[in-house]
Length: 217
Image (cartoon, rainbow, N blue to C red; front, side, top):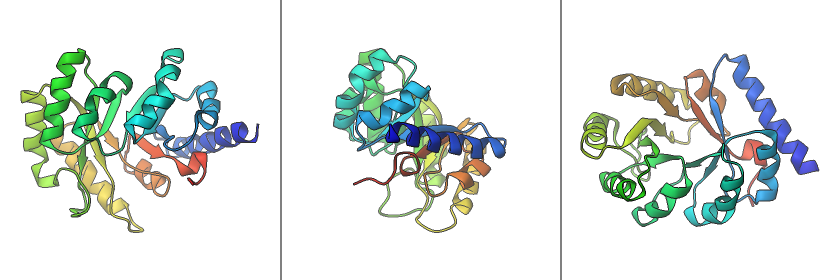
């Protein structure tokens, strides 16, 4: 019972913070590593958006649950290997981490087989960090054209993981400029440590894990 009330209270608290900023950001409850017993209270409460970053774990946890709760939207938020795309398409509704042309081509091929179009965010390496994947900001227009015109992907927005500094806002501002340039509609940015800054910078999806479920083991 403690888990049930705790996770719901934390979610409701974040929802209120967003409402106070007059924003319509959707909260993706990042449920990776947490068992379904921790997640079910949110599902029964009516929450719809959940994030996972490991395909195998997601398949084990969500395959039957998604059949029972057809309104749930599952978001692939981790780095996606090309050999896992065939498992992602049937189960997930969104991919937040399209970061290479090779992956785009693989998704395109699998979509034809599955006859299903998935909603996709292009991951931007907004801090130009060598250790992070993503498309360089200066290459986004060419990459987007390839994805939409040649590969027929349903690109809905941009995603970023800003550098680990205390001020994410400067990177969120850059993301807004890129969104304007691309004429896309959605921004996936902001996590447990900086989601309020992201909300202030028009993020439409925030990815919140530990702030809802507690710290991971």
